[in-house]
Image (cartoon, rainbow, N blue to C red; front, side, top):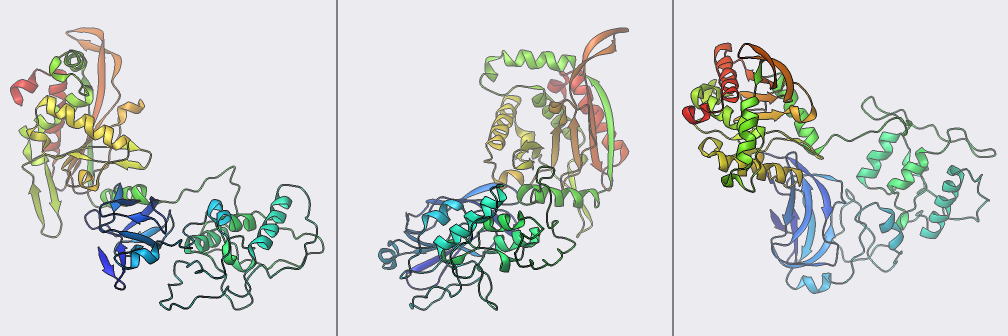
Length: 480
């Protein structure tokens, strides 16, 4: 995970915190250049396709440079932070002038220091020479840039055109010079159809920030009187976002992290495994009574007891009676792999997107143990602390759409699994019970399964067993 760039500087690379992950997004830095770090100290939080993970540094030293700002997606194996260790730590403890992120606070707090090291933009590389750079020619002075930015903002706010300013350095680099901007800012400009050569930089040393790009995109399309005709921006590519759109009517959300991984997995599952879904409507009145009884039981004190607990146990009993449902399809070997254990997945909706952590060896847990595992799983998911390991190796999944008031659905299989059970809302409905129509607690279950390895008979038996246990929960004792 680390490499030596010289005798006193170590480069910490983005690790693979899961199985086969190729990239991760830097959510938050907990350190800045010049900070002292110790072995095991968390330096940043990253989001992979599966979870948010905190990364500890594996050695003592002083932070020399952060290679990427927050919000950047970095490939696994790429260096993300440089730390001076040993003899180099003392020298690195001096204030380091580095542009880490394109935020207004950073831009305003930093003052130009001609004698210091200039900010290094990602993609431009770091000079290995000890010679100090001179300020780049054509870069606008910070004060002049701020005045220009204020003038543009005044026009945007409807205060009328600004008064002519005194002659200043050119707003953009001279012809032939590439405008200074970080990769995320360049992508933003491309998405908005903004030519960086026409943008007035407001960042230190003439760096173009996100705010500069947004300001340029918001300028009126019609040129001001007596102004030179604006250059025509190149047409965006078919895959790029429109050059401009009404932000009050549309919101564009980047697809990344958990949402991106979920979308790819669902598309792959839907078009790889032939899905079959069967439904059954069940009278769960007795199950609901048992839930209330368990809540009063001292053995379950402090545990999460709800209908999902008994539904999960009912599914585990059905799998025990029909073990072939707990399998996966090995395409490469052309084999069906029957699992002799059940890692029970529970689909959970979180602010980061849908995740499916699973309870390891759920088949071997007693009902109180299962209640404890479910409670811990849900709490961890809501806090956004679910680890990648907790979402790997699932064999069968339950998704509870009933919490949203939905009667049922046709769930898509979690990749690598053969079955998923959807639980609908439990409602008081008229039901024929012992020859009379009575109000009963009723729900609808839907079981989707991979028809390559689960035929209609096996799928029907599993669903019927789950329904039978929920109708007569005493069967948990005789069948378990």
